[in-house]
Image 1 (cartoon, rainbow, N blue to C red):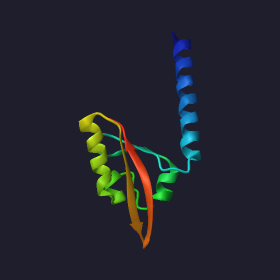
Image 2: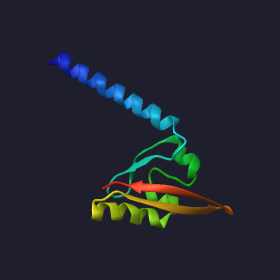
Image 3: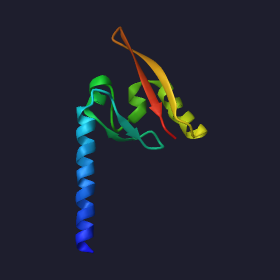
Image 4: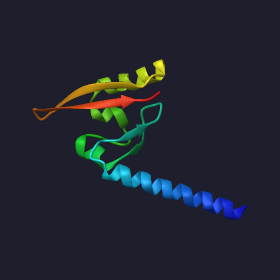
Length: 102
């Protein structure tokens, strides 16, 4: 029993390390929110692409009002939602695609 638990724990750690490596290597902002919009996980590119991003504040720190409605639409319809957003910061604009799963 202890050996099986030890093996399961080792496999879980390996999966976590692989996930961390993928997230850390990505040049895309990837973050996971709970149902209240709090950040559960965010990769380093999130802060690079969204300098105002704050893990404690979550969505509100991004200043993207439409992102919260995207998440709510995914919850209420139980359908994957995808939208393109425009953000302007310091006179420069950029667009990005966000998606939310139910």
